[in-house]
Amino acid sequence: MTKLKLGPIEEHKPVRVTLELPFVLHRDLTAYAEILGREAGQPPADPVRLIVPMLERFIATDRGFSKARRS
Image 1: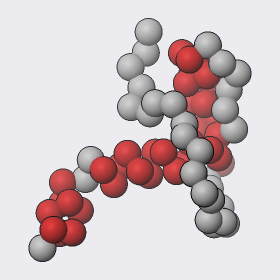
Image 2 (image 1 turned 90 degrees about the vertical axis):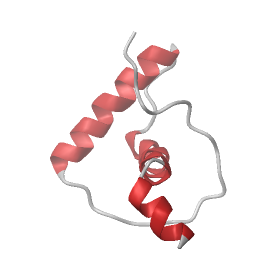
Image 3 (image 1 turned 30 degrees about the vertical axis):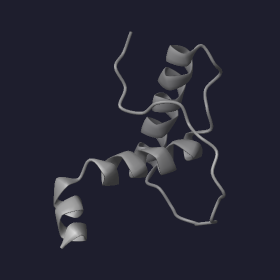
Image 4 (image 1 turned 180 degrees about the vertical axis):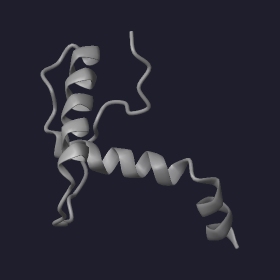
């Protein structure tokens, strides 16, 4: 079993943001969604739905950000 940093995707009230991704990043998100779905025994998620949990995880584990936010 692969140890992924991202866990199950939760539903939240959305705020619409439009952005363009490089093709290579979109390809990697698609591959990640396929692996995540396979590990969870579910069909692959829409790769766009991975962006929010990945950003949340990144911000939650950024020590410099946490330190700057506290001061």
